[in-house]
Length: 127
Image 1 (cartoon, rainbow, N blue to C red):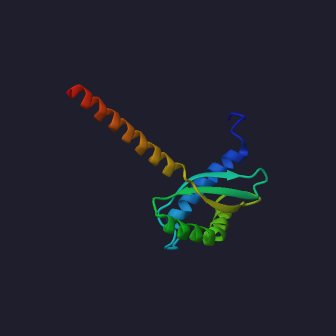
Image 2 (cartoon, rainbow, N blue to C red):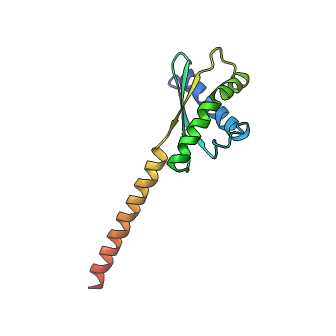
Image 3 (cartoon, rainbow, N blue to C red):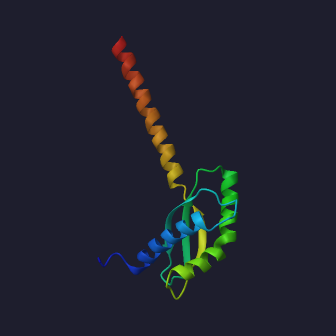
């Protein structure tokens, strides 16, 4: 295995997979709907983990989802401790990942610019 792929990164990847599975299959809280865990950053001492997630919900629903995830963090942490063999299971901090939303917005702007350019080219050709 390459040296640049540290144990911290491997642990973060494993936590991401396990959390995605737990959230999909174990969480019964109606506030936590369809979310996608997009990434996990674990501190060097494994004491804290930032869990990045995204959803297609509105801002009001995102607030409820965040509260539901915070409420379920102890449950998720307990289940992580059973699934992963770590001395320290990190405290989970859930952060909404705006990169997907930003990417969709940028893609829409690019599509609009291309459409405007095409229509401008069409009008010049018709003359």
